[in-house]
Image 1 (cartoon, rainbow, N blue to C red):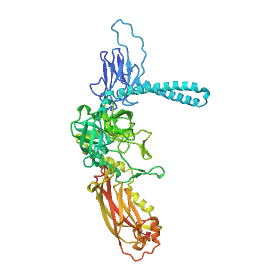
Image 2: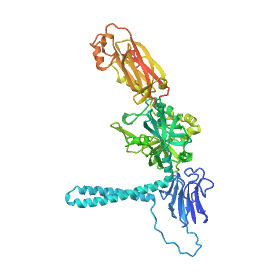
Image 3: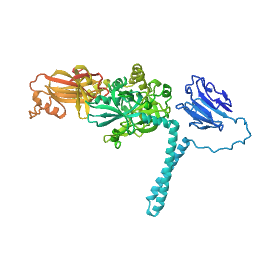
Image 4: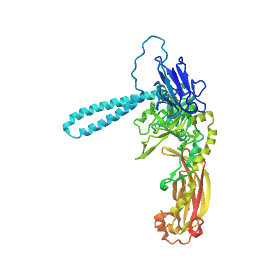
Length: 638
């Protein structure tokens, strides 16, 4: 006889006695469950798990994928035997709890009672034991090595001892690996992992000579559609004449499909523009301010010529499955990492995906902040991340896609990216792809913009900090203050400009000219306040390029506008710049100004973007401010 007792919640103390003839007991909130929870007990899934009676009379756990089940404080294994007196917790440790009472059923035959049986260790227990053995073996090996270097008299003994230790270490590691494999099979089936490996296609760029370059990873989501990251799809924008993007199916003779169209999530460009439009800052410890950033909407669809195999198609997780994601949820992925790997040329002949297992480490909004479930679309995980894996599907225990791997944490060493030891990387929640497929992406984006603004309110706008900071730091002398002479605003879209090929990259260049007439013999500041994180300005004096500034939202040039006599440095072919800085400025000041007229100044404002840049097609605002440095009493800006 099986008796289930509610230990907490509104049903605390209630007992459910299970009929002796029942061989499968389902727990959940649905009315068809044998053990029901109230509808408002949302820690419990509609169908959470089951207890199944075996021919031996033992009751075992049947897991339903994502819903969490713990027995006596430890996550339950599929098929685990349940003993009488255990405590079962659902949803989380400390969640809705049940007590299980098991009494022996009445016997209907004259057979003797079965003797007590030895208990087999669960995969989780094996993994724990193997891990401990591996640690012990490594410690013993270390001691053996230390002894071995102590003297030749015991060298033979140490060799034997170390060999035995190495064998023990290898055995422990093998046992540990096998236990992890068993755990993976319990959490994410071998069939699901085989399916994801079959469903991932290698995104490649082919030039006119059919030479290839790795682009990323995509996975089959429809008859002629694959899903990937937006930053992978945008590589198609950089193609030149007779070049193409293809996807190659895995395997020795993997079919090649040409990509004929790409579609970026409608939130990718606006979100990128919102994050990069200003250098917002938030106060840090002892004044060390930190910048604003985000990671969102990095998903896209690729349409190919031809029909993709239906058997390769991956399903996107349901809302219930996505909502059930939590720290510790098992994950698996397959993709095509190529960054700093050996023999990556092989992927151009036959694509071989790499597969990895991991878990969810956290879930946040696109700004890495805790948030309500609808905004919790950035999945943190410990799956490896390297160039080429972008777009890889991440599946959960159901075998359905819960996220797309899109970025990771790394630092630069000698120009190469080294993964951060914390092993925290990121994925875009998969319902972003579903929104594109069902046509709801635009509406959801409109609703999400209010959340962006709320987050940004915690930061100080850069335009309230940097212009005054730059002016203070570039003041040409004591007692001087800037007087604003002009402010000119332009809107530039790089893609509406000229496209240029520069070695391996293509760029769009749009620009606007701002003509001015200024008096020489004074210092000036030309400052750009823009929505472009790589804004550039060029300064011309009488038609000759004097200097330029680039590299931030607040490109700035500060210089002394010289008279023609002050430009004379004894070399008529290379006179001083018309607007001089630093040592050149000091040398010019030693020369009398002489008679002078107003000088023709032209400031050229540029929007230069790589063809594959998310902001290449964005309309960006640029405000050019021109200041003359005057005695402080003549300026309104002190």
